[in-house]
Length: 70
Image (cartoon, rainbow, N blue to C red; front, side, top):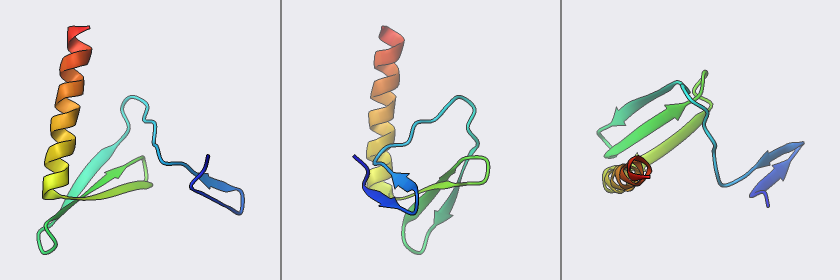
């Protein structure tokens, strides 16, 4: 079920990435945020605070360990 459906555009709550998707980041020190950009033209953006970024990285590291162990 889409979170938003407007003018033929449907937005879901997930993003699926293929291999070798261009990614970059910018630091917003004033607001203690990191902005992650994904896609050839930086179409997808995630603004995330320091603590949530650390939690996301920790979760990703655990997932990598589990994938490696399989």
